[in-house]
Image (cartoon, rainbow, N blue to C red; front, side, top):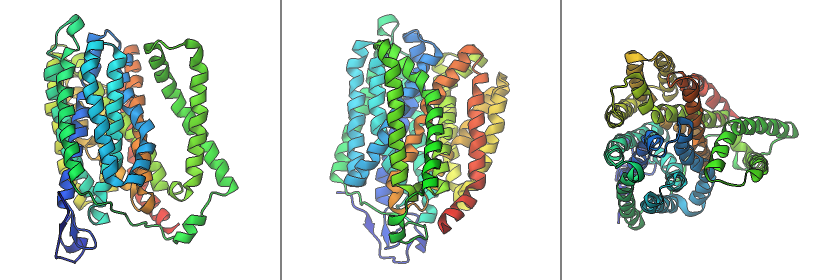
Amino acid sequence: MITPVQSSNSSGPKGGSLFRTADGKNLFITFALVTSLFLLWGFCNGMIDILNKHFQDSLHINKEQSGLVQSANYLAYFLMAIPAGLIARKFGYKGGILVGLSLIAAGAFWFIPATSIGAYWAFLLGLFIIAAGMTCLETIANPYTTVLGAPESGATRINIAQTINGGGWILGPIVGGHFIFSGGEGANANAGLSTPYMGIGIFVALLLVIFVVSKVPDLHVEDESQKSAEQKVRLKPSSGQLVTIGVTLAIVCGLLYFFIAPILGLIWVLLNLNPALFQPTKYGLLVVAYIAAFILVSKNWDMFRRKHFTLGIGTQFLYVAAQTGIFSFFVNYVIENDPGVTKMQASTWLGAIGFGLFMFGRLCGSAVISQFKPHRVLAVYAVINVVLTAVCMGGGKLGLYALFGTFFFMSVMFPTIFALGIRGLGDYTKLGSSLIVMSIVGGAIAAPFMGHIADTHSMRVGFVVPLVCFVFITIYGAVWQKLENKDREA
């Protein structure tokens, strides 16, 4: 049974160890075990980004329709994030991890019958189930790494773990591309999908056994707000604040509706559902989502009033939208700018060069963030990516080089935004983490939207989507310290 190592050094987290808690425990072994989960979901996500081009050819669909690959993946994050947070609250970090691994194994093994069915919906269902499991893992593992030591070094630990995640992103398209793009033609075009996903299922089953017999301590984080516990219990939004909450949520739901409704329409047609039920279902879901969001915000007002957290949710939404758009249409962009490159070569470039730079960027970023304030690093990296995506829109060889550059400077954004967003939430950390993971739904929106622009204009023009996202990320990094200081004093 794996247990955290007890240290005789009682000097606290500043005693020299990145993984030492205030009571002297050294949690490096626990951290190492949890980082295996980062490798796993990195590999799964890396494979997803080569499926767009594969399904475009094997199922004869356009770029917008192929964007449903990302939609199935990230809509699962959107729907599963809150349940994952509730599971973590009730059963602890370990219970949530076991649920997540079980779902991933089930989704991976589903690909065996899915290849026999051969329909797009069957593959999307498998991706949805796997993503539901990954949601549990990300909701738990990301915040868990930030509490396995001193709070001030949380951003460094999560960046180290995300570096291992980058290794999975590298292996995903390389290993997946070898099997997927080497498949047959016609009816056998999707036969190569079963082997890599069966391998994932077996690996996850082994991980499941390891976590069952291992000890994963359920740690808690300090609440940095200066309000007393009694004040927080009494804290409720005023009438004016309730009106503001209602209006704000109406705007947010309206924006989400504008982007998600077309995706729902694509799914409705794909599943050949009754067209007469589409409109009432669409608006019914919108009303339910609005009511649920209003109740959630008003019941947890002490958390939502912290602007560094609420804006962190929006910033993560935009970051994942940018990342997903760039990753998922990498192969299309390369082939459009260099027609002599094959799909196999492009998928290899994605894994070896693109995700190689992504992993190297996280490795360097961990060192940079340990020396400089994380929010400043985030702002600088985002500014650089604004410039690089603008160059991508110009196309040509220079655009291709700029595309590779975006991987390096995107590398630290997700873990850094995550760590900045949940900083000082205390008992709200698990719920706050689930909401930031929920914002990953931005990836479901970006892929079909960029695909639509690419179908209408060109792949180059589609890069305006990540460009706009990086502008907002820059602003969040620039103002985070002021927001956090005000939230701490409130």
